[in-house]
Figure 1 (cartoon, one colour):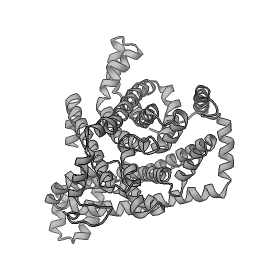
Figure 2: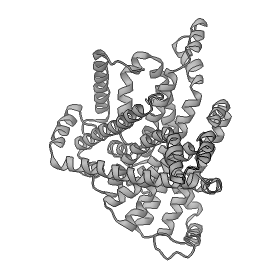
Figure 3: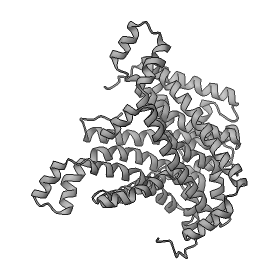
Figure 4: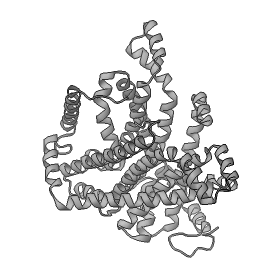
Amino acid sequence: MAVKRKPILLFCTLLISFILWEAASFLAGAAYFPHIWVVLADLAQLVISVAFWNSLILTLLLTSIAFVVGVVCASTIAIMVALNRSGELATRGVLNFVRSIPSVVFLPLLVASVGSSAKTAVLLAAFVVTFKLVTYIIRGIGETDPRLLDVAKVMNLSFFTKIWLVYLPSTIALASTGLRLSASRAFGTVVATGIIAGTPGLGLGLLTAETNANNPRLFSYVLVMGVVGVWIYRLFTTIENQLFRWRRSV
Amino acid sequence: MLLQNSTNPYFPAPSEIFTSARSTLTWDWVSTSLKSSLTTLLGGYFIGAILGILLGAVIGSQEFLRAVFTPITNFIRSIPAVAKVPVIMALLGIGTASRICSVSVAVLFPVLMVTLRAVATTDEQLLDNARLMGYGTYRTIFSVRLPAATGQILAGLQAAVQVALFIMVISEMLGSGIGLGAFVIHSQQTFMIEDMWTGILILGALGLFLNEAFLILERRIAPWYFKSKEIR
C-alpha cells in the first residue's frame, strides 16, 4: 500500500529531524557535533567542488564494477554447487564459514598483497557480493519446480538452455532480494576500504575529514553517504517492483 | 589442500598457521584481545537490540509516529554502518565506550526497522481482541504486538549479529589497539602473516558459532517460526 505523504507529515519529519540533530549538538557540544546549518553550509561548499564529484563518481564506479564481478562469480559458483547434490553438501560448510568471517578482516591481507588502491576496494566488495548472493541463488535453484525439470528433460534441453529457461526464472525472484542487499553491502564495503585503507573515493574523503578534525566536513560526507545509500536501495527496489509486480518490496 | 606446500608469503600453509596459533593463543592473549572483542560485541549488540526493539515497538504501533519517523530511520539506516564509526569516535574517542556505542548504533537501526514493520502489521483480529479486553496502548504493545512479531524480530536480530561483528572489527581496526580487529591489522603491519590468518580464522569461527547459537535460540524461542522457514 503506497503511503501518501501529506505536507504536514513531511513538515513534522523535518522538524523532528532538526530538533533531534540540535539536541545531539547541544548534548555533545557544537565543536564535536556541529549545528545543522554549519553542516549544510559545509555540504553546499563540498558539492560545488570538482574533487567531491570525482570521488563520488569513483565510488559509484568501483561499487558497480565490484557488483557486476560479484554477481558473475556468485552465479557461476551457485550453478556449479547447486546442480550437483554432492557438491552442495561438500561446500555448504565452507560457504557458511567464509560468510561468517567479517569481510573487512581480509582488508589487511589485500593491502599487504595488492596494495592500497582502487583494485583493493573492488576485490573486497566483489568478495562481499559473491558470498552474500551465492546463498540466495543456491536457494533459488533448489526451489525450482521439479515438474519444470521433468519437462526440460523430456524436451532434451541443453545445459545452457536449461539454465536460461528453467533455473534463471525460478531463481530471479529470490536472487533479486539478494541483489538489492548486495548492492548496499558493496557500497558499504567500498566506503569501508576507503576509511580503513585509504583507497580513493568517498571513504577517503571522510577519513581525511576525521584526521583533520574537520567535523562539519565529516558530517557532510555522512549525509552524502546516506543519500547515496537511499538512492541505491530505491533503485533496486523500483527495479524489483517493476519486474515482480506480484510481490512488492518495501 | 591447495595451500599444503604453499610458499606464497600471504597464503601460508595451514601447518604454519597452526604452529603460529599455538604460540599466539596464550591465556594472556585470550584475556585481553578476545575478552575486549567479546565485551564490545555482546555489550553493543544487546544495547542496540534492546533499544531497537523498544523504539521499533513504540514507533510501529502509532500511525503518526510511524509516518514521521520511518523516513528518518530509513535514512540513518542507509548510511553505511562503517561511516558512523568515525563520527562516534569523534564524539567519544577511541575507548571501549566508543566501540560499544559503534556496535549499538549499527545494530539499533536494522532491528528498529524490522520491529517497526513487524509491529505495524499485527493481525487486526488480535488488536480487536486486545481492545475488547480493555488493554491500554503499552499493554497492547508488550502483550499483543511484540509477541506476534517475535519471528520477524528474531530474523532481524540474527542478521544484526553479522553487522555487529563487522563493526566490532572496524572499530578495533580504527586505532583502538586492542581486540581481534586490532590484532589482525597489527599482524599485517608487522608482517606476521600467520598471526593475521589466526585472527581471520578466529573471527570466522566466532561468526559461525554466533550464527549457530542464534539458530538454536530461535528454535527454542519461536519454534513455529523456524518450522515455517523450513517449509518455505
